[in-house]
Length: 120
Image (cartoon, rainbow, N blue to C red; front, side, top):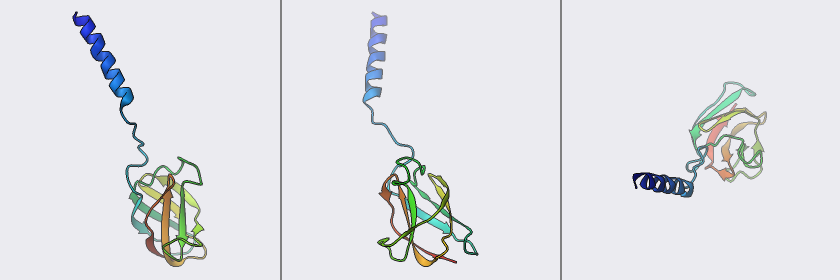
C-alpha cells in the first residue's frame, strides 16, 4: 500500500511539473536601459547597462538590435555594430555620425523606451 501511494505521489509530481509554465531566463519584463557609458572619442566602445536585455541571439538579428536615432520614435534610426550582448550589458561601436540623439534597444522583439544620449 505504501508503495502504491509513493508511485501515485511521484506520478502526480511529474504531471504537475509538466503543466507548470516555462520561464525564459533571457527576458523577465520590459527592456530597460539604466545607464550608458559614453566614450571620449568617436568610434570607441559605448557600454549600455540595463535589465531584461535578453541574450542578443534569441530571434536572430531581426529581433535583437540597437538603434541610434535623432528622435525618440526612432524614425530613420541607424543600427549600431554590437560587439557583445548579455542580459544586463550591451557593448557597441559609437557610430560615425553620432551626436545628440536617442538610444533604442530591441531585445527578443521587444522595444525598450528611448534613452537620451550624447555621443562624440
